[in-house]
Length: 182
Ligand code: ZN
Image 1 (tube, rainbow, N blue to C red):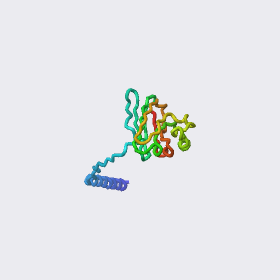
Image 2 (image 1 turned 90 degrees about the vertical axis):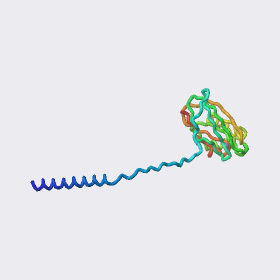
Image 3 (image 1 turned 180 degrees about the vertical axis):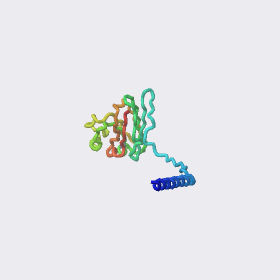
Image 4 (image 1 turned 90 degrees about the horizontal axis):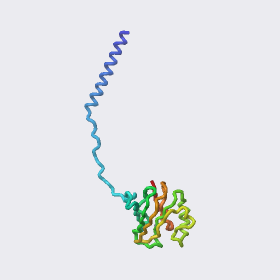
Protein backbone atom coordinates (compact mmCIF):
# COMPACT_ATOMS: atom_id res chain seq x y z
CA UNK A 1 0.00 0.00 0.00
CA UNK A 2 2.74 2.38 1.01
CA UNK A 3 4.72 1.56 -2.08
CA UNK A 4 1.74 2.31 -4.27
CA UNK A 5 1.20 5.69 -2.60
CA UNK A 6 4.82 6.64 -3.15
CA UNK A 7 4.58 5.51 -6.71
CA UNK A 8 1.46 7.63 -7.17
CA UNK A 9 3.12 10.68 -5.67
CA UNK A 10 6.16 10.16 -7.83
CA UNK A 11 3.97 9.76 -10.88
CA UNK A 12 2.03 12.93 -10.09
CA UNK A 13 5.24 14.84 -9.55
CA UNK A 14 6.50 13.75 -12.93
CA UNK A 15 3.19 14.60 -14.55
CA UNK A 16 3.17 18.01 -12.90
CA UNK A 17 6.70 18.84 -13.90
CA UNK A 18 5.97 17.75 -17.42
CA UNK A 19 2.95 19.98 -17.50
CA UNK A 20 4.98 22.88 -16.14
CA UNK A 21 7.66 22.18 -18.66
CA UNK A 22 5.14 22.27 -21.44
CA UNK A 23 3.75 25.53 -20.19
CA UNK A 24 7.22 27.06 -20.03
CA UNK A 25 7.96 25.98 -23.56
CA UNK A 26 4.71 27.44 -24.73
CA UNK A 27 5.31 30.77 -23.05
CA UNK A 28 8.86 30.89 -24.26
CA UNK A 29 8.06 30.43 -27.92
CA UNK A 30 6.65 33.63 -29.38
CA UNK A 31 3.24 33.41 -30.89
CA UNK A 32 3.44 33.52 -34.66
CA UNK A 33 2.45 36.89 -36.00
CA UNK A 34 -1.01 36.99 -37.46
CA UNK A 35 -0.95 37.80 -41.15
CA UNK A 36 -1.30 41.56 -41.49
CA UNK A 37 -1.34 41.81 -45.25
CA UNK A 38 -4.55 43.46 -46.40
CA UNK A 39 -5.87 42.77 -49.84
CA UNK A 40 -5.62 46.13 -51.53
CA UNK A 41 -6.52 44.91 -54.97
CA UNK A 42 -10.08 46.02 -55.50
CA UNK A 43 -11.19 45.00 -58.94
CA UNK A 44 -13.74 47.29 -60.48
CA UNK A 45 -16.20 44.78 -61.85
CA UNK A 46 -18.97 45.79 -64.17
CA UNK A 47 -22.08 46.49 -62.13
CA UNK A 48 -24.49 43.63 -62.65
CA UNK A 49 -26.95 44.51 -59.98
CA UNK A 50 -29.04 47.61 -60.14
CA UNK A 51 -28.20 50.33 -57.67
CA UNK A 52 -31.15 50.81 -55.32
CA UNK A 53 -33.95 51.82 -57.66
CA UNK A 54 -34.78 55.47 -57.30
CA UNK A 55 -38.31 56.22 -56.19
CA UNK A 56 -39.44 59.59 -57.47
CA UNK A 57 -42.97 60.82 -56.80
CA UNK A 58 -43.91 57.29 -55.80
CA UNK A 59 -42.54 55.80 -59.02
CA UNK A 60 -39.56 53.45 -58.95
CA UNK A 61 -37.26 54.28 -61.82
CA UNK A 62 -35.12 51.61 -63.40
CA UNK A 63 -32.80 51.98 -66.36
CA UNK A 64 -31.37 48.99 -68.17
CA UNK A 65 -29.22 48.97 -71.27
CA UNK A 66 -28.62 46.47 -74.05
CA UNK A 67 -25.54 46.58 -76.27
CA UNK A 68 -24.08 45.21 -79.50
CA UNK A 69 -22.54 42.32 -77.55
CA UNK A 70 -26.06 41.00 -76.93
CA UNK A 71 -25.94 41.86 -73.24
CA UNK A 72 -28.04 43.73 -70.73
CA UNK A 73 -26.12 45.65 -68.09
CA UNK A 74 -28.30 44.22 -65.31
CA UNK A 75 -28.92 40.64 -64.29
CA UNK A 76 -31.24 41.46 -61.44
CA UNK A 77 -33.82 44.15 -60.86
CA UNK A 78 -35.50 44.38 -57.47
CA UNK A 79 -38.63 46.41 -56.75
CA UNK A 80 -41.31 46.42 -54.10
CA UNK A 81 -44.79 44.97 -54.56
CA UNK A 82 -47.48 47.46 -55.42
CA UNK A 83 -45.04 50.13 -56.57
CA UNK A 84 -45.30 51.84 -59.89
CA UNK A 85 -42.24 51.09 -61.98
CA UNK A 86 -40.95 53.30 -64.76
CA UNK A 87 -38.51 51.24 -66.75
CA UNK A 88 -36.24 52.68 -69.40
CA UNK A 89 -34.55 50.42 -71.91
CA UNK A 90 -31.65 51.97 -73.80
CA UNK A 91 -29.92 50.30 -76.72
CA UNK A 92 -26.41 51.65 -76.26
CA UNK A 93 -25.03 49.91 -79.32
CA UNK A 94 -24.85 51.00 -82.94
CA UNK A 95 -26.30 48.02 -84.74
CA UNK A 96 -29.67 48.12 -86.49
CA UNK A 97 -32.88 46.78 -85.06
CA UNK A 98 -33.15 43.98 -87.62
CA UNK A 99 -29.64 42.73 -86.79
CA UNK A 100 -29.24 43.38 -83.06
CA UNK A 101 -32.72 44.32 -81.86
CA UNK A 102 -33.39 44.49 -78.13
CA UNK A 103 -36.54 44.70 -76.12
CA UNK A 104 -37.32 44.09 -72.46
CA UNK A 105 -40.08 41.61 -71.82
CA UNK A 106 -41.28 40.65 -68.35
CA UNK A 107 -42.79 37.16 -68.08
CA UNK A 108 -44.34 34.95 -65.43
CA UNK A 109 -41.92 32.86 -63.32
CA UNK A 110 -43.10 29.53 -64.78
CA UNK A 111 -42.62 30.50 -68.41
CA UNK A 112 -40.78 27.95 -70.55
CA UNK A 113 -38.16 30.21 -72.08
CA UNK A 114 -37.12 27.68 -74.70
CA UNK A 115 -40.65 27.48 -76.09
CA UNK A 116 -41.19 31.21 -75.72
CA UNK A 117 -37.95 31.76 -77.65
CA UNK A 118 -39.16 29.61 -80.54
CA UNK A 119 -42.58 31.29 -80.57
CA UNK A 120 -40.97 34.74 -80.44
CA UNK A 121 -38.68 34.03 -83.38
CA UNK A 122 -41.75 33.34 -85.49
CA UNK A 123 -43.61 36.45 -84.35
CA UNK A 124 -41.98 38.76 -86.90
CA UNK A 125 -45.13 40.80 -87.55
CA UNK A 126 -45.62 41.67 -83.88
CA UNK A 127 -42.03 42.70 -83.14
CA UNK A 128 -41.23 39.23 -81.76
CA UNK A 129 -43.98 39.33 -79.14
CA UNK A 130 -45.90 36.07 -79.71
CA UNK A 131 -49.67 36.39 -79.42
CA UNK A 132 -49.92 32.88 -77.97
CA UNK A 133 -47.91 33.99 -74.93
CA UNK A 134 -49.90 37.07 -74.00
CA UNK A 135 -50.98 35.44 -70.73
CA UNK A 136 -47.35 34.81 -69.78
CA UNK A 137 -46.10 38.21 -70.82
CA UNK A 138 -46.73 40.89 -68.20
CA UNK A 139 -45.25 43.95 -69.94
CA UNK A 140 -42.81 44.68 -72.73
CA UNK A 141 -41.00 47.55 -74.41
CA UNK A 142 -40.68 48.25 -78.11
CA UNK A 143 -37.99 46.47 -80.07
CA UNK A 144 -35.06 48.89 -80.36
CA UNK A 145 -32.08 49.39 -82.61
CA UNK A 146 -28.78 51.07 -81.67
CA UNK A 147 -29.18 54.49 -80.08
CA UNK A 148 -32.90 54.11 -79.39
CA UNK A 149 -34.71 53.94 -76.09
CA UNK A 150 -38.18 53.24 -74.77
CA UNK A 151 -39.91 53.88 -71.46
CA UNK A 152 -42.73 51.80 -70.02
CA UNK A 153 -44.67 52.26 -66.79
CA UNK A 154 -46.41 49.44 -64.97
CA UNK A 155 -47.47 48.30 -61.52
CA UNK A 156 -45.08 45.83 -59.90
CA UNK A 157 -46.82 42.44 -59.81
CA UNK A 158 -47.28 40.28 -56.71
CA UNK A 159 -44.13 39.34 -54.78
CA UNK A 160 -42.09 36.72 -56.57
CA UNK A 161 -39.15 36.19 -58.89
CA UNK A 162 -40.09 36.89 -62.47
CA UNK A 163 -37.97 36.66 -65.59
CA UNK A 164 -37.06 39.42 -68.02
CA UNK A 165 -35.60 38.77 -71.43
CA UNK A 166 -35.08 40.03 -74.95
CA UNK A 167 -37.30 38.19 -77.44
CA UNK A 168 -35.26 39.01 -80.55
CA UNK A 169 -34.48 35.63 -82.18
CA UNK A 170 -31.79 33.83 -80.21
CA UNK A 171 -31.19 36.62 -77.71
CA UNK A 172 -32.96 35.22 -74.65
CA UNK A 173 -30.13 32.77 -74.02
CA UNK A 174 -27.77 35.66 -73.29
CA UNK A 175 -30.22 38.39 -72.47
CA UNK A 176 -32.25 37.38 -69.49
CA UNK A 177 -32.40 38.21 -65.83
CA UNK A 178 -34.47 38.12 -62.67
CA UNK A 179 -37.08 40.68 -61.81
CA UNK A 180 -37.60 40.32 -58.08
CA UNK A 181 -40.69 41.79 -56.44
CA UNK A 182 -40.35 41.96 -52.66
ZN1 ZN B 1 -31.84 41.59 -78.07
